[in-house]
Amino acid sequence: MDIGDGEKIFQTMQKFQNMAMNTKMIGEVSRIEFVILQLIKTITDDSQSVTMSTLSERLNVSKSAVSQMINVLEDKDYVKRILTKNDRRIVFVRLTELGEHSLEKALQSFLQVANQIFGRMGEKDTETLLCLLDKLYLIASDYNNNK
Image (cartoon, rainbow, N blue to C red):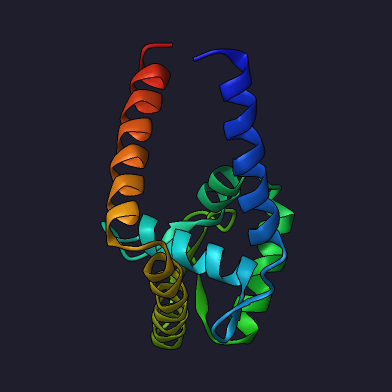
């Protein structure tokens, strides 16, 4: 692949990123709330909660920025902070039942739109796209692991 193809892929990915940035709401939650709730859910699949520090690292934002985002989610009763008795500096976050329900509704709204979009592409083109994206992921993953 020459640099021209790399530029084309980058430009196309930028278009999708810009479109995503312009999406304000996914169902009843904002785009950033959706991202944070989904991240908490993904990380906590193996445990009950996640630390604020882990969220900060994964989102690549400051701990104070994560704290502000969590404040908003906590005010909406989507998450709950859990303070540790041994070390007050460590704060855990977990989804509440309402948070899980709101995330599930937002995910269903997202999937409904995605299904409509892919429906317009057609079954054959969608299948080809998915195969190519899987292949691209494997190659990129291999590249990152061998760096």
